[in-house]
Image (cartoon, rainbow, N blue to C red; front, top):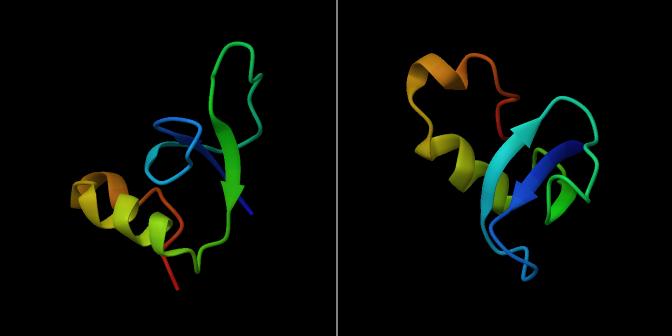
Length: 59
């Protein structure tokens, strides 16, 4: 499972990735997705190559 932050409560768009769970009182709209989730692929593909090397690759 990947710890992510969504843009809002609809959980349609991922706007951030975290290595571990975060406090939802500080970081709103936290959730988890699998590396197979299409939303993760969209987020991953939008990142520069220099950042992608530090992110789990979509499957």
